[in-house]
Amino acid sequence: MTSKKTRAKRRILALTLLASLCSAGGVSAGPVEARYLVTIAGLHIGTALFSGTISPQAYQTGLTAQLTGLAGALTSGRGAVSVSGLLQGNRSLSNGYALSANNSQIRRTIQIAMNAGNISQVLIDPPFEPRDDRVPVLEHHRRNVADPVSALLMPVAGSGDMLASENCNRTIPVFDGVQRFDITLTHAETVTVNEPRKGYVGHALVCRARYAPVAGHRPLPATEYMANNRDMSVWLVPVEGSRTLIPYRIQVKTQIGNLIIDAQSIRGLSVDATASIKR
Image 1 (cartoon, rainbow, N blue to C red):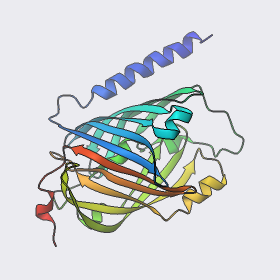
Image 2: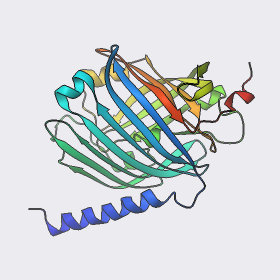
Image 3: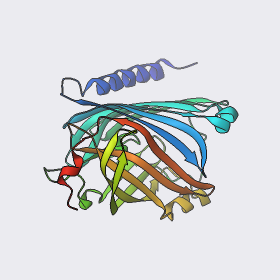
């Protein structure tokens, strides 16, 4: 049976997360909604929906994903995440993360209580099986981090061109409840997007991405493969009413083929983003 102490901790965490999700309230924010198609090796395996509000100072967003097609028939996988936080300079400072995911074998929840990117508590139910070879997560690994969804938001400091090449260049420290890793972005190119059917005509900032494990991971071949992977990129486009970029397309080379997460419809982007682009 669950102890009174454990139940009390969970109630405190639930209240903390609820307060976090409400912390962006009262700020004038613009709604954004993006629907993505997920494919791997050319096969349709799932869909994802990113939606919420993003203002110049704060965000309150959610992400839901579901496996479809053959993958869905085999595993019935789906998940939902809620996050909120503050936008300062070129950083998203998460105030809370709550994930619920399930497939045909297991249902798991991950709750992270955070304040401006600093983690105070993590609850995982059921917990992952302990592994002796897992790199320990220390206290300093839980400071100044973004959750995986907040890491998708790319604030741009100052008042200059949001799609300037230097806005790619950043390193994002991420903690997902188990692993602490860095995602480093560097500029690749700026491309023209002419897809009015999907909801955007303008430019996209294309950034190369690199993954660097820090803690919580296991030294497996798959981890080494991703750390050495130089075929990862993200296309970023601007959200209207804020100085924040969000993904239009993500591409990652995997050991079984290219994983592509591509916007199929997107609302809330800046329609005049091309005006400040130097041709």
